[in-house]
Length: 374
Image 1 (spheres, rainbow, N blue to C red):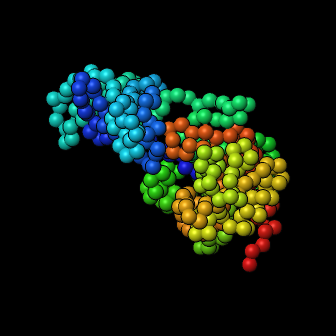
Image 2: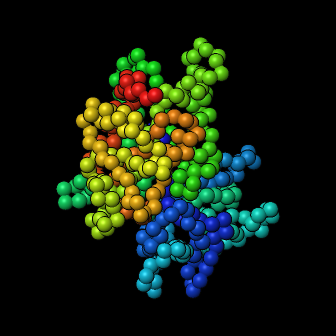
Image 3: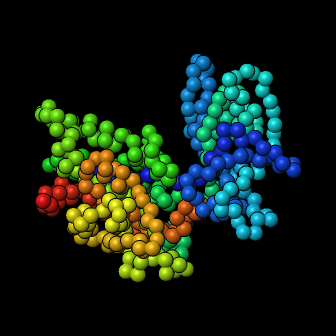
């Protein structure tokens, strides 16, 4: 199994977002996750998310929308230091209208500026009066690109953690490219992508829910002629989870903040994360297994531990290891500017990680029985 998360720090439109000041229409937002909020100033921000609409049959349905053009910005004038706490409110054009219909809550075009409702409705292909509610976030409309002196770097929003989510999916797809890929295969190949890691994972869609245990429990009985009550537990005892979350590359401007012998570099391979206090779930048998996969795939690996006087982040690895009781390893590709609105990663690390995950799916069944732990 490979587990990763798809969410990133962002700004979310508040349930009542309608604001106005000095001739500007403003949209109230709240912060999601631990972003570097000063990096959001003066960026061209679009709107994306889920809108609930009333359909012609009188029922309700959801539609996903992405307004991929600048609709606002967080202006930084007269804020010399750059706010680290409150990203203020994006400024957008005004096109106000009202609603006289009674609802238990105020109508959407009363809680939000009608123009916001209008552009969301237009993107959803419905009339603004059909919009009942929505969950919208802001995002940087500047697309990802390849850069660096030798085009060796990726500049993009949300590399943490769409980078590892992409590599996990591509590794799974590539492992199934051959028509005979699953012949003699005794394992189930699975990628689980979770939401809400940046805020603790304790949601129905988060890794700290029973989502993955419930799925594995159901899968463990597929094709089994046994009705033993321990089938699920036996499945977990022979399973292995890779927790894939982007890692910190050494930053040349702050190299003293890194443990001297554990300074991952971009484009030198996926980073195995280790922590004595179990903030990461990695242990020696897991390293041995992954190292053998990497040897067969001819991809480099790196090791990382945090300095003793620094706090250590965490991932979905420890919580899933505790919930499943399955062997787990934490790893990720190195990057700079984590949780900034725009992050930097290595081009070659993407290829390395995809090949590593492809090899993990292809070779795990064979390698699993060769690593003996009492």
